[in-house]
Image (cartoon, rainbow over the protein chains, first blue to last red):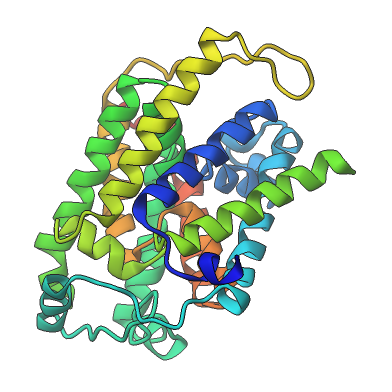
Length: 185
Length: 138
């Protein structure tokens, strides 16, 4: 059983498992949306004193923070006990494209050339990690949701606004990958 | 107590699913935005199709949640600007860091402590949105 879980999961198993998470949260009387935690965390840090948007009853969102803590633990468990021995099965075309941008493929889940403190300490690294985070935080709150809230929960409930948001996700992602990446890497 | 534990357990399961599906992989997100593999599209597609069926069934069967309350679904606010503009801004960040908000925290748990910088940036971005909210087109 453990050996089966350890292997990389096929896309259909993963997709089904993700919608299962949405369903159990609905049965708990909640909804699947991760990025609202960022607003809750701002409120906890006292942002409500300056900006009324953060002045809300964040304690009602405690359940979602517990879900967030669980997700960190889940990452820890996966990295320590559920890791597959095989390198990531990335397509050769992507490996070649990234090579042209001087980002080597090392078989890990993320490029170790980028995800380390020495790289983050460079101006470019700081721009990517802090700036990228800024775009995630600003964009998700502006759009009122991220991949979980719009692409999964919203589309499952046939919400047109969520479809517009997902189209936006791809406009931004394609622009970054094809137009901006060649400029920064 | 059990009330709280079930959310942590759901989160743990989510973290494992995100890890094993490789949806937390910076490389996989690049592959998706380059249309060089079906992997991520298969994941999102399966999740959406099964999700549509599940939501439809829950509505049809007038399901109740664990506390016995009727399950209700709230419609998203009717607009387009905030979804298109906000979505595009998020998409830029998603491709750049290779992670959406969930995976950012899952990767932190995996031991990639540099994600603290991404989390700090995303809290700052959320705060600045709150600051500018009333001046932005929605």
